[in-house]
Each structure stands twice: as C-alpha cells, then as structure tokens.
Image 1 (cartoon, rainbow, N blue to C red):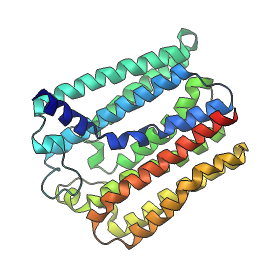
Image 2 (spheres, rainbow, N blue to C red; image 1 turned 45 degrees about the vertical axis):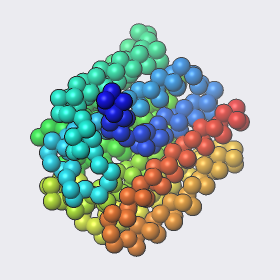
Image 3 (tube, rainbow, N blue to C red; image 1 turned 180 degrees about the vertical axis):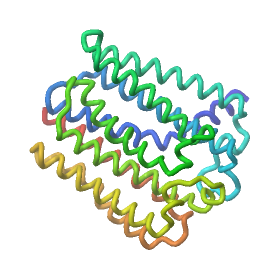
Image 4 (spheres, rainbow, N blue to C red; image 1 turned 120 degrees about the vertical axis):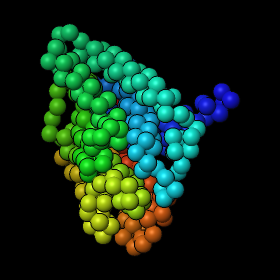
Length: 304
C-alpha cells in the first residue's frame, strides 16, 4: 500500500517535465562559468529550488484541473493522479503545503547564501521573487482566479522559465547583470513557452469544452501553429544572437545541434490534423531545449 502511494506521488510529480525546468539554470550558470564566477553550492541549491518549484507546479496543476473537472475522459495526455483517484483531495492539499514549505526553505537558503546581509536590496528583491514564484506555481490552475484559465500561462512560463531562471541564476553568482544574459533569457523563455503551447494544442478540445481559456483556445488551432513556429524560430535566433554577441568559442554552437530535431518537429506540427498526435512531440521540444542548455553549460566547463 505504501509503495503504491509513493508511486502515485512520483507519477504526480511528472518527472519528464523536470529537465526543461532546469534549462534556464544551466544557461545562467554556464555564463557564470564563462566569467569565472561559478559556485557549486549556489548551483546545487538553485537546481534543488527549481525542481521543487516545478514539482509544486505539477502538483497544483494536477489538483486544480482535477477539482475543476478539466481532467476528464476527453483529455488526451497521461492520466492525472487526482483524476484517477490515486491521491485524495485532502492528501493533495497536504502535499501542496509541504512542497510549498520546502520550496520556500530552499529558496531562502539559496538567497541568503548568495547575497547575505550585506546585499540587502538583492536579498529582499529575490525573497519577494521567490514568494511570487511559489504563488505562480500554485495559481496556474488552482482557485477561481487561476491565470492558466485566462490565457496568461504563456506569459508566466516565459517569465519564470526564461528571464527569471536564466538572468536570476546568473545574478546569484555575479550580483549583477548584463544585456547578453537577457538575450539568453528571452531565447530559453521562448523555447519553454513553446512546450506549454504544444501541450495546450494537444488539449485544445478538452480545454475548450471545460472553458479553460488557454491562449490556444483563444487563438484557435491554425493561429496556434503559426504562434508555435514563431516561438521556436525566435528562440533559436535569440540563442544564436547570444552566442555571437558574447563571442564564445565555436564549440558552443554544438548546443544548436538539437535545432535539426526542432525543424523536423515544426514540419510535423504544421501538417498535423489530430491533436492527440502532438503528445509524442512534447518531449522533443522539452529535451531539445534542455539539450541546448546542457551542452552550453558543459562546453563552458570544458573550456574554462
């Protein structure tokens, strides 16, 4: 019995979403390596905090959509833990509280270690940003004012997976920021948003029937394809501009090898007529984005 409950929580954590969540941390940390400002303890805590926030978001998404009835027999993706009854409503609430507390403690430790008392402005700013991140993770689908039901999910993914993750992680090391890392934050943010958009394209009919007004539901299927193409192509362009503007070694361009997979993916999406076939494409975009970030990070370490 205990084993099945643990399995249900692991399933609800949706481990396949975790690589994408750390992509921004890898890019920001790789840039810190390039500037010889890397700190392994800060890196470890940043990864832990990001993973906890992503798991919190996954729990909240499962719970929020389950309570609202959005997850039903029409849903195409993997069955959710709340929807299947594997985790009760009360247990989910307790899980959300526990994960929120762990996220808060991890973020607070990271902030104090990175900035300390002497950088009071940065400490306070990042502390408020951490609270906002916890709020955003929960309010995507939970509550009457859930922003995921009002077409705002894309904005928050772009903000937290891109600008906050990439730029914020770099500031943790450097205590400052420059224009180059902002370009990288935009690039990773666009690619991360493409993952959410693809997820919403897959769930178009079930979301529309459940009155979950994602950007895809608001735009319609055809325009969503154009929007998806923009997100991926613009993301690739911004990452390329980042590499060129900084003047990294040519080895860093190895990270763009995954672009070939993304081009093939775009061709499939444009021609697609059945949303359920898009489920298999999600991991391609998520892992391609993670691949760009990981290879960039590793190359900086090898060349330092």
